[in-house]
Length: 163
Image (cartoon, rainbow, N blue to C red; front, side):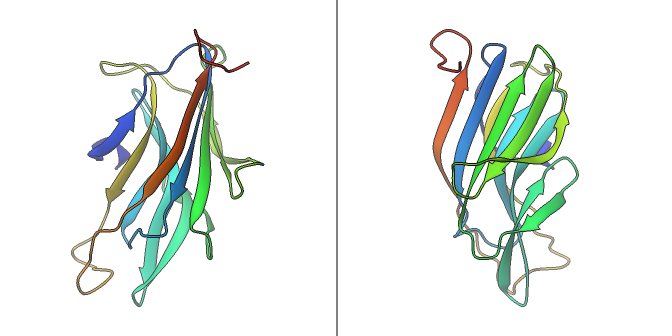
């Protein structure tokens, strides 16, 4: 589904090693919406927040986009920090997350990437809705919002700052 998302903002991968970190405030997202950090090329990998819910009560979960596997529920959280670490010399890409912005834990399995399409490998952010009209999550679904803050991209290329 990530491949078809219309709301994507990407940055061309720079240098051999890089790191993209973003803060997500998902407090205003509504059921059926997803948002997060991505790495795209010939493959589309993402990690982020998906909002589900029953009886009109939204429930946020941290998930991995490749197979929509839920990592864990985020009850009581309204913000999360996501990070993509890329090493093109060893073809090692992986996501991690933090609840406090200080200590990061692995998120999903490491993956390999191949350049694709017209811009090569690109990290970025995304947001989209997967509402199913046959099984509405609420009588009158409304669009929510997600706030991306502090997108920091460091790399070992010229003026990149990654050491």
